[in-house]
Image (cartoon, rainbow, N blue to C red; front, side, top):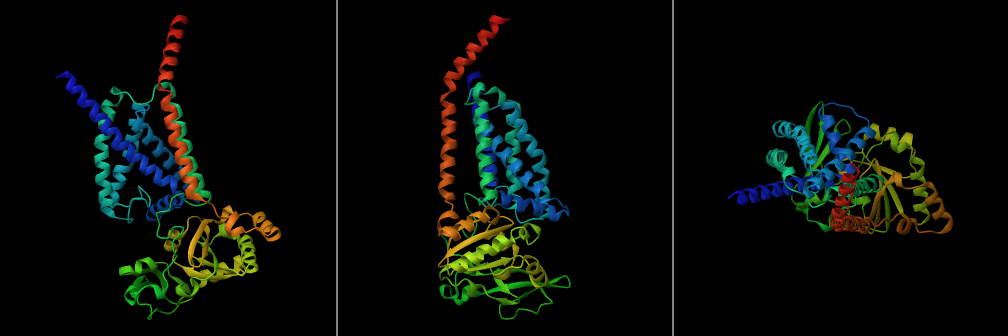
Length: 421
């Protein structure tokens, strides 16, 4: 009878470890693989609470949370530092449980962002998930140290080191270049938008929301208001959601005109038209001259309109055309304060952060006849993602293979210590 009870406890502990641990792993991984998406979500919370935090601190917070969450998940799943990992998970729930309860009731944001764009669940579902996780964490607080883990104590730190390194690499690449995995509407190798010849008239049905004097009103595409109204967002019905990116030249919708699906197009996407972009304005003009020399097209999509767009143009002095687009759509398009998208015949070939492009690379391409667009700037992030994933799993297997030698070394050091007493 006692043995059955002990077996039941072991099963419950391992079940709790797997459920809580894997949830933390997926959540931390989704945030690590798309750090800019997590930054946007944190800033969305700050905006709701009218809190102003510098972008640098938000970036540090986003990276710290994603790495910590992933490492806790690894520790729980493999039974590493059993009491510490259980208390760390409990500490997370002390913050998350009341936060998600508030979100479920007040509904200040559309989703909590727990799993980034990888898995989107409702605010109520998030609260239920956290309540269930809290129950399993209580089990771990009470009995986690009673069941051994997969790795011996002498080599557990190597697993933790590998988890930190893996999550850190994901964050670095996602911040510096682009997410290693793209769960947004416009991934690489897809067409950016559908032109009018590729969808029916029914797909075009949609409304554009504008604001004036604090009140919002919807307009159809042929009834757009004058410049005294401020554009808020576009809402499409049926299959038109695939054409959610809408670009304006003043009050005119020029989406189909500029995305003509012909030749090479380099798009500068300016999500933050502030000082961060202005420091790279000269580089963008160098890219435009490079594109012009190879008979390509380049233009900018800026999260600004009207007087704000004109003010930005006066400061940035772009030599290329600049159009306005809604910032949420631009954030779905590319990550970072400012990004680049390279199209060939309407198909997305690559994306990357503008900050990752150097003046020297552009100059070298211009003078040495190097294909900057198809060679130097075309990063195979998908292949790199598989490589580091395989390396991480191989690391876990190698460390696991040290379990038996670890036990021998552990006994040796224990006996040696006993002799010296």
